[in-house]
Image (tube, rainbow, N blue to C red; front, side, top):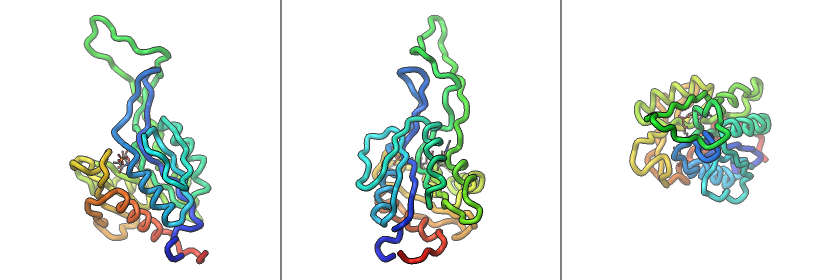
Length: 232
Ligand code: PMT
């Protein structure tokens, strides 16, 4: 496969935040810029893959050669992921998906109530997109290979290992998002890679570096987890 080790493979990558509407003018979201997920998409294309990027609202242009599906809510991202599961070889969940959404979407702008200091919002859980993908993995072919991210502010290894197991992932990219200059919105990132079968016990640490370089390393590690393929 030479310089195009991903030729013939279809990767589906989620990126960016999701946006959960509260009323016609407000939403719940987070600080994901999409940079990490878009860097993964660009790296995968450079390695020869066909890439579909399921993207939440971000201000980035899609990398050349990438097919982008734009979504807003976790529910929409979930539906797009479920539609693509069966046709992909590797699924990477880099999106910062909102765990909760408003139980009811207010039809009109929520008004301030005179005489009340607080406002209580009732939230309900969103579907776990990547766990849903992993659950639909083909038992015979083990396709797709499912790679998750874990964004943690403490106990990185323990929480990430727990997500790897609980969500049924093959590989996880754990990043400490409490470090200045790394993670959300930054141009650089660092990560600890861990695998389902305890392969490389304790994980492989990738030091702080530009997201483009880290992305390439992540894609290469994911490719090396696939069963041997006949040369193209
Ligand atoms: O976008 P950037 O500004 O470049 O920032 C990059 C990043 C910090 C967002 C990225 O590196 C990252 O860590 N992405 C995952 C963020 C996250 O929400 O992690 P989590 O630990 O909450 O979720 C664990 C995994 O489950 C992730 O693969 C996530 O996509 C997935 N998930 C989470 C909740 C949910 N309802 N469905 C999911 O699929």
